[in-house]
Length: 432
Image 1 (cartoon, helix red, strand yellow):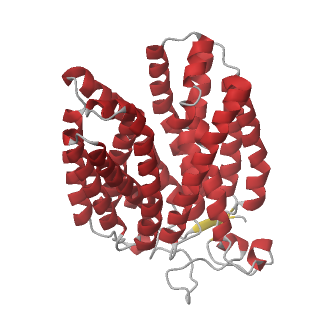
Image 2 (cartoon, one colour):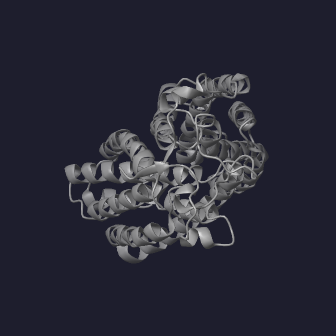
Image 3 (cartoon, helix red, strand yellow):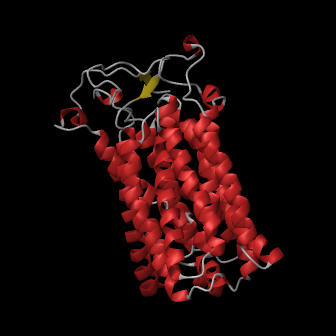
């Protein structure tokens, strides 16, 4: 195992010779890596769904079941990649996972039946939505402490533009080459990222001889028992569960309301032509909230900030069933967008702020596992609510109560402290 103590070593590596902190390069790498998860995400797969169903002559219900199975089994990929990050570093994990995703996307483009589609979709979901998401968050978390909130806010903004650009680009590619040709070329493009990631990504500042982004910039110290939790200690902290369950609640809501956005608006008497406007408000307001939340997020405030985001979410869920005009729908979209911007940045930044860098890969992997499951369940719960009652409203009220309860839990959750500093081993890093 190629590990070394996390103490900045004098070195002449090129990251150490740059006139600025190399962590900001890693923020760009991380945003590119998260954008690369597109084929493993619902909005990415949605670009090819109709053409895929027509090509394979597959029933929509069967495809929905395949997608659900792939999402659930793909979530398992979070666990080994978290351990890989902590043992071998984010650079190695990033290269391996990106290569795996590239091969899986090319394989999916060649799928000809139910079994081949299921197998390749599990791999695409696993390497993309699950594993690469964990790696991209850890790339930043392993480099930042003092400015982690700011770095994650910038990451979220870059990611939004990355997703918008990639969706537009893939849409054009599908029109030009068909779903198979576009999907295959996407796999080749992901493969081309592998050497770029190997050249640019770095695992930790200390392993490159770069002073870390310590809480006190005048004090460069090792990652020690005083600021790094073990995986078990993190799981025992109420703050971990407050952040995880709060993020799960938001992801569940978000996946449901974005997938059935047009149908939900129609239930409230809002014309279908306004669906795109509502989605634009969600995205635009989320960008602004990313920056604000990133500036405000700190170790002392990050969980309380989550509570504010969940309060906004609960408010939006309560008002939606009573709206009757496009103006009401805009207020709803504003509240959801603000909530999403806040919760997203908190989820990205909280675990590094609260538990340190040593075991961050495993900690974030556990959290990502939960949010992937929640995202998979969101549309199912919304659909069941509509099927049983003829309306989405009952589920909105249930989720509002849950969000409000989790908001209160976030406000009450204490900032975690290590009960026994001697119980945490010396922090370790990886080669540059």
